[in-house]
Image (tube, rainbow, N blue to C red; front, side):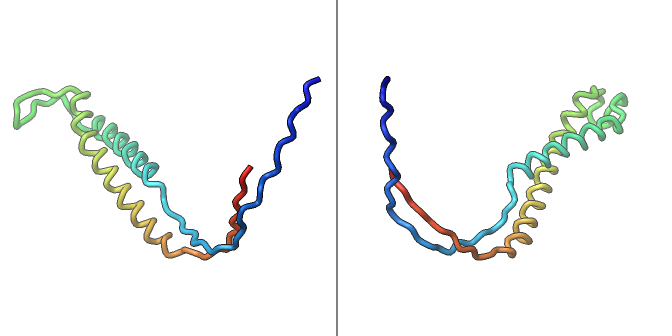
Length: 111
């Protein structure tokens, strides 16, 4: 039988009690993705609501539903992301006031 080596015990280096500030903040990526998703949904609803079979009075061209969706999505996604960013900033300001001090036990070990 091969004898297994005995793992070394961790060497105690430092231990200390420290104060830390805990602050809650929103995840901006989640808010921006949700805003983009809602913008696409609004663009889809507007595409169905806008009748794309009429001739455009400005260009004298008939646009397909896919073209109407793409143009509307360009505007709605940008607006949705902007509104979601504003909501995230407001949440950060409101939740940022709720910071609290906690005591943490900081240990550092080496093997």
